[in-house]
Image (tube, rainbow, N blue to C red; front, side, top):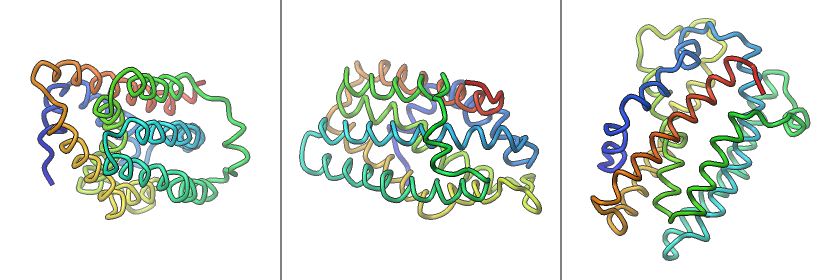
Length: 223
């Protein structure tokens, strides 16, 4: 499903979008060459990341203009707390990581930077600002995994990261990404003006840069 607002944001922030979606971390996932220690570090930080994204969707409930907005945000919140977190914990168990280990992990600067930026944009702005700040993550993961899965150069046999790619390229997550695109367009129909568009591009581009930093944090294994 096409999303006029998402496509406009992506095209306007093409360099930052490309640097995020084509990051070395992503390329090495597809090639199966990412050091496993880097992936484990990423998984631990992603657990902490999801906690703050749940808070962002709780904020989206508050920021909703009507029951439709509030229910959409509540469904996303419920999905993170009761489905995505459970799946993440189960997936991480296969990498030798317990939930207790991940909960005790210190937050990396890259984790704090993006999650707090999303919350700041949501608190300072409206629901459209918040959803634009979320879009590089929510939609981006679906776009990245779909591109990797469709790439004939992707290593499939013996690639330890193929299950992660398949999870985000699969129908369930693709439906989440398409729902986020549709919500952007519903909000744009009510709130978007051409005068406002450059600020939204700025938010989207900054979120892409912070997502790229999150990949780099995983690659470096840094806090």
